[in-house]
Amino acid sequence: MLPMRLIRHNLEQVKAGLSNKGFDPLELDRLVAVDARLREKTVAVERLKAERNRASDEVARLKREGQSAQDRIAELGELTGRIKVLDRETQAMGAELEQKLIWLPNLPHASTPVGQGAGHNQVVASWGDPVEHPFDARDQVELLASLQLVDFAAGARIAGKGFPLYTDRGARLERALINFMLDLHTREHGYTEIYPPFLSTRRSITTTGQLPKLEEDMYLTTMDDLFLIPTAEVPLTNIHQESVLSEDQLPVKYAAFSACFRREAGSYGQETKGLLRVHQFNKVELVKFVHPDNSYEELETLRADAEAVLRRLGLAYRVVELCTGDLSFAAAKCYDLELHAPVTGKWLEVSSCSNFEAFQARRGRIRFRRGDSGKPEYVHTLNGSGVATPRLMVALIESCQQADGSLVLPEALVSYYGAPVIEPL
RNA sequence: GGAGAGGUGGCUGAGUGGUUGAAAGCGCCCGCCUGCUAAGCGGGUAUACGGUUUAUAGCUGUAUCGAGGGUUCGAAUCCCUCCCUCUCCGCCA
Image (cartoon, rainbow, N blue to C red):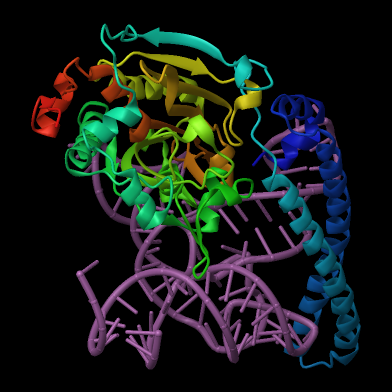
């Protein structure tokens, strides 16, 4: 959510920023018009209310002094009626304004490159050498099947296409990845471990910005009006919903494992092969609540924390800085980490590290107080995947496969998996 | 799911239709006093939005006692619905 005051006073800048994000700037004119009418009307109602309050005190005084207040009371009845009518009108206008505001995306940061879509994203860093197998290597689909790591048919029988069922060594490898990542972030990067609810209210999902825009991309339990979380960002960010943190506890850093649920409507073909795009997947998520003065430095360390996972596993990756047109609704700046999948032949997005500045904080009323005396201000929130497992597993198994069909695991995973090699069957 | 109790400012806690935005205490801030410390004395101490202003401060208006609605000239106070916490019961991995 952007503050109305900012829009009022810097209309042209806001228009420019939002249109870079693909938002229709004309909508802002409509918004400003509603705002102006609302304020005009509010002034009128509040004037009447002031009058009522004064007269009401007068009634109280007369009664205390034992005098008759019948005349004043009759007048007030009429005044109250007018206030009620106007109140309803301002309430309706207020709701209309709120609706419009909640649909406005965040402004991109000045450093975010301007561009219209994924084609304008910029590769800003890369690490490791992409693996080139000197033998006839198998792709993820073949490996998952031949080593019996995932039973897609069983998953589909249970829940439908896109719900992978990890079996035996695959299940163990999945758990090893999760534990490895959680330990790395909590022991070495200073994050506090959280195990959150996997369902979430409309309110909480509106804070993080997936609502109202992405309602149809999520699973909804209609009996309770709860959504299955598309990412642990939702519960983690809402831990401090409606609260005021103290300056010296910043930055607050949380890491959580969760399953994530996404309907992924409209996906098809190559995109959805194997583990590339699924409806339920596991992810370790990192969320930070930081001081607004240094949130961009915090974004860099967040990105480094996510990169550490990939480096520790020895997997080649690149860092992509998203352009304005590809930025998500709530983000001001975002880096994607993409792993190299040598056989599938693609760079696979396994992490997004974003700075939301005060956008989510405003929606969720997440604030802090500068020193003791200052007024509460909004914190900046950041989050990054650290990282999502399905594509990590794709890049990992394609990279570490041997000519004999076995997988030789990276050193960092051996103790978590309990063996250095996954042998062919 | 059923029954009961409760939800008031940073905290504890009074209040029960009208000078209550809210007593009192604690905490915190400023000042005074005092070899130091402690104590004591005086004053101050919520948030949001709007008007005024170039803007802030200031002044001023409105709203806010879990949330929403209702009764009333007037609601923290009465009524209804919902949410949350606690206790007991039921069900359950």
